[in-house]
Image (cartoon, rainbow, N blue to C red; front, side, top):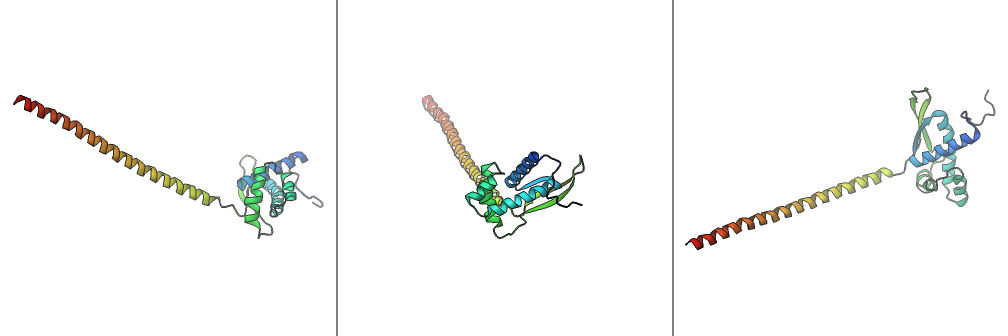
Length: 178
C-alpha cells in the first residue's frame, strides 16, 4: 500500500529533484508548454499551479516566495503581469493541462505535453507584425516602381538628347556643304 507517500521522488536525490522541478517550472512559464514524461509533468504541475495561485495577488511577499524557485527575474515578472492576473483571475484552479503524446522510442516512457490552459495573446502581435511587414513590402515595391519610372524617363531624355545632338551636327554639316 502507498500510505503516507506524498510525492514521487523521481528516482533522484532531493537536491536534484528540486533543481529539476525549478527548471521545468521556469521553462513552462517561459514557453507556456513543455514536453516531458508523465511522472515529471505531474510533479511539476503541482508546483506550477501553486505558483500561479500565489501570483494572482501581486505583493512583495508573493514575489519573494516565487523568486525562491524561479531565479530568472524576467520570468517572475511575466508570471505576475502576463500569465496569472489577466488569464486566471476568475479560475479557482486547474491552470495547466496534460496531453498524452504516446511513448518515447528509446525507453517507451509515457510522454506528455504540459501546457497552460489559457495562453497569452501573442498571436495577435504576430498578426500585427505580419501586417506591418506586408505594408512595408508594398511601400517598398511602390517606391521601386516610382524610382524605375524616374530612371526610365531620365534615360529616355538622355537618349533623346544624344539622338538630337547628331541630328544638329548633321544639319550644321549640311549647311556648310551648301
